[in-house]
Amino acid sequence: MDHQNCQTASVPIAKEQKYDRQLRLWAAHGQQALEEAEILLINTGSGTVGVETLKNLVLPGVGKFTIIDDAKVCDADLGVNFFLDKNSLGSYRAECCVRHLQELNPEVKGDFHSVLDVRSFKSYLENRSFSFVLHTFPIRPDLLAIVEKHVASYKIPLISIHSVGFYSYFKIKLPTVLPIVDTHPEFEATTDLRLLNPWKELSEYSASLTKEIKTLSAHEHGHIPYVALLLHFLDEWKKIHGTVPLKYAEKKAFKEFVAAGAREVGEENFEEAIAAIMKTIKSPSLSSSIREVFEHLPQDPESNLSFWIIADAIKQFYARHKVLPLPGSLPDMKAESTVYVKLQNIYKAKSRQDVAEVLELIQNHPSYKIVSKTDVEDFCKNAAFVKLIHPSDDTKLDIKAIVEKELINDDPSLDLQPPSLLPIYLALKATSHVSAASSTDILAIIEENTPKAAALKRVRSISEEVARARGGELHNISAFTGGMVAQEVIKIITRQYIPIDNTCIFDGITSRIQVINL
Image (cartoon, rainbow, N blue to C red; front, side, top):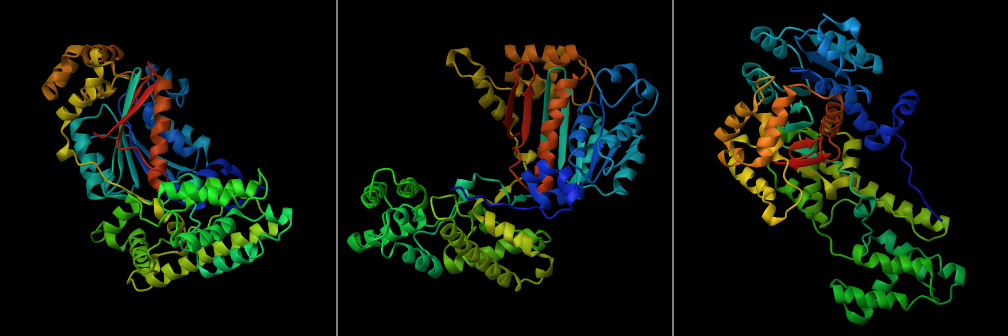
């Protein structure tokens, strides 16, 4: 029979019903982080992609958003922005968009600011608190400088977005190292059965199930959970060979050893045991991601964040036991329900015991009071897959080297497919501060920064397409791009899943996406 693990979100019933699907993705603590977030959008240019991004943040319930935009609605806006209508003509675009966005989710707060002179803009930023900043291109260089200085000073994540015609890109700029606790790995990857170093309760219960294995009835024999089977046959193997099977050849032989214990062909529990050997019988080791966490030296005040306090405690736990805290999950397996539940409770009890030990270690930290038990439980459960996302360093960016590496795909003689989308980025980047430019102007800027790229046929063709759009957006392209941007914003706010690294380029003509670290 199948055994399913159910997790209920600790949120009010009405909200649970409203946000049912997304709670399955990022759970109650992720939803809480989203509802506490305040997003700022500096909306410039034709103004569609930024609003589409906000749409995809308002619907799942972001706490508050603010739009800074000094443009007034004109006829051209009505064809590309679904949050504007004829009644909006002549009004401030920011005000109209805020009003209509709030209709999507009345629980979300919205605000706007319609003045973009340097003094007012700088003052507005300094007197408000935001957890995330978005800006669209084209944007005036002086305003962009203010934005970048502000987010750097206050350690705020920034995403730059540019959508023109059939093309778009967005770039994430993180202020500091971003720790992701719940990267949402596949369930099978998180399974840790501890077959090579079982604790007392697991060993004793498994032994009780296999003690009289030769005299069990056919039904009982066919319902021994494979965890107990593998522990039993590992003991038998060690009696013969003196050690456990760790090498590939040894595991292959161990498979035959286990298979020989089946009474008849097709015993499902034995088939499960044999299938699990390669994945579950392995020496405990640290993944590169958690090793990086242990080796990272956080600086003040970063070291007093809850994440690093827990990480230090788990590092001590690992030094003491040579294993990470047990996640406590148990996969489905052939077994009697009562036996499976008992085995499941043994794993859960050990997991709770490990959490309690980590909590005890945390008590030694001077800032232990800021750490919640829930955070410790989440960290222990996901410890093997915790990941640090490092911010890109623009000072070390060698755009010429990246261009040469990427554009080698454009050489037809090498028959490498598909071609790089970097030319789209180069063409859009050349129009970062102007709403429209000729292909000659675009190519001149590209040639100034990356001379080899400007001579390529695809770069010239894409530059002509960008020039033809004259800074205009296509709603479907901007809507799709806005959805992708919102997805990355949610990853960073909830600190779940793994954000892209760090630039995403979209070609709406060929329906292709490429992520490049720029």
